[in-house]
Image (cartoon, rainbow, N blue to C red; front, side):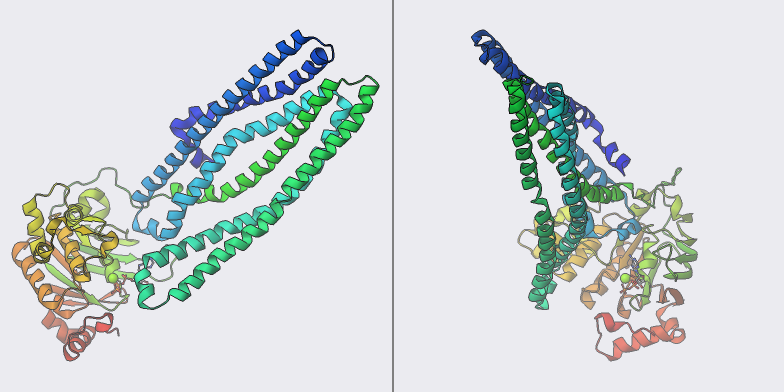
Length: 584
Ligand SMILES: Nc1ncnc2c1ncn2[C@@H]1O[C@H](COP(=O)(O)OP(=O)(O)OP(=O)(O)O)[C@@H](O)[C@H]1O
Ligand SMILES: [Mg+2]
């Protein structure tokens, strides 16, 4: 994990290495100051030498100035290194997510990915900054201050050892109790984020079902959990300061008492005693920092692991080495295809599928919900890879194609289609970046979208809100079809893409397809028989198997499932709802 993360430091190696150098210089200056203070008292004040006072005073001033400058520089480089590091982390995660196949995406929740890209990266960034500055500073300061203190008086420095031992044990006890609490806090954060994301994303559904109170309670519980866990952790952490102060004042008292006796017996000077006091502070502060680092690192570790998971996830659909860059025609073949979503899943979602679709044919797919219609068509543009058997497009196995070529030629309107925030024109251009106005309009005419777009006050420049909330369901579907058509694909797949379009418009779309793009293979998944009945052939799927293939008339005779669906839709006034397809 560490390797994965550190690889992302990249161009920020230099500031990452410079920071500790400045930190060391800063510490050296801070250590010199008490030493100089001792000599200003001993060889200046006590001896009445104003010259010495001035000279050493100037040295102290210089040391203080240098310490300040080094401190500022260390801070600057640490900030540059840590923010750069977090930028690289985010970029690496985002880039890798873009390469994920559908099955990679299935492994992570959206809320989880968002938390990883935001909160987790911020945690790691803060920890990295702290590590660069404090990880060197605290131990170095501790060692230097101990060294200097024992040089002044070996016997008095024994007091420090006592304090270190006392504080070390106390801090260890505190952090070891706090750590598991923080680990739990992070898990709870995920719950909170997913609750917020789900609620905000589906706020309309929440309102429609008047579930506000339920959602508010859910949120209250999630944030209450974090609150109480933090309180528990902080309740332990607050002991840090009093313990530290106790140790500090105990040291000062002991040193004053023993030191005074030593001064009387002439084995210690006043100046030395003064500098010992400063070293007490330095030593105990370093200990405090070490305990903070410990807490911070344990907190960041959980985040770091979550980030590394995203970066290390290997996209399982990759471009082949010698990719085929041309799709000959729109023929599709399924050759004994078996498929399941999870490798360790028990049953196949698709079982022994054999199909042949000729280029230019119109094929309808009918089947109950969960009969694996979407799963079947997702194999054609290689959104998922088959587990056994093969899928061929234009006579070539889809795994041999360059992915971009394949997906340009196989345009698919997903069942859960989305529009992005931006104008209608910008959304359509996802299909073809540099499409001319004529091309845009033609695609929209084919998808029966042109008319309603023109009726909008701003036409093609109308702004679509995030998620396409300001267009109707049917309008959104037509825009998505137009977007796919702009690719001028050899194969066009519509996954339940006209479910929200009225039957007349649906018929017009099919007519336009028949007349205007006769050479394109059209695969249409539908719940309504009327959407597929004039297709060249209709595939009836049942629980992941092909139950029957034929034309409308043939299937009415040979397929009981198809006949059932047909009858339920003709006798019950053309239902369009989900239950329109009856499962066996
Ligand atoms: N991403 C996924 N991960 C795991 N299982 C999935 C995934 N997508 C679908 N499934 C499962 O695969 C089966 C087939 O789903 P699929 O979406 O292909 O059905 P469908 O025929 O398109 O249904 P609908 O008519 O409701 O769209 C279902 O049992 C479903 O639970
Ligand atoms: Mg589906």
